[in-house]
Image 1: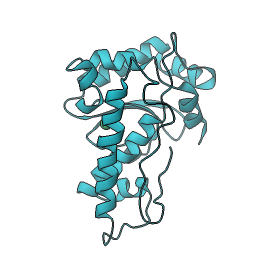
Image 2: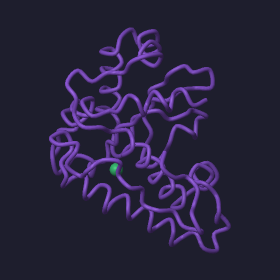
Image 3: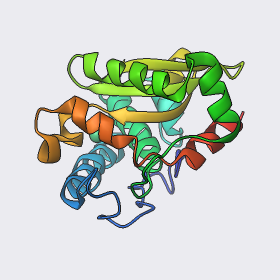
Image 4: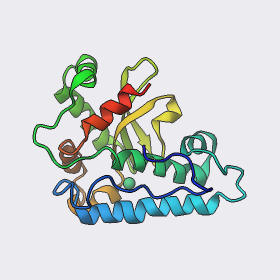
Length: 203
Ligand code: MN
């Protein structure tokens, strides 16, 4: 995660760790430009505008998500979610899959990486409306797939978020229109499993 604490009282729009066209054709530079430069930027601006006088100044994104309802929760949650989302990608790679201990735990808990992908895709396809599908770890290191509505994050269930797919229409509509399952299937090519494994090992 790039930043969860405010700097001089304000949260900043995270910098993308790759060029705008780096994820093509899975995610176009056009989609990335709107998603990061407009949607995420709006959440950052909205939260910063609401912070003064709210009593929440100086709290981390996680603390705001866990301790506030309403608009503050929604904007902080969307910043936290998008920071995790945008920092987990790399250029498309054929046969992309996890390695090492994380790969082993995925095999143990879901049967195989292919079985895991199938369950994750089903969770993404069946989440009604806007939200996020997550791979998280519990305190024992067991893996969980959860559907979170709107701006929710797995930390609200005591889980540690590892990897996510954004199923808000703004994440895919310019490239895939209504074909959410096609978009989600393509995302497997650009998941940076080194980033996900690092999140898993940080306990
Ligand atoms: Mn989004």
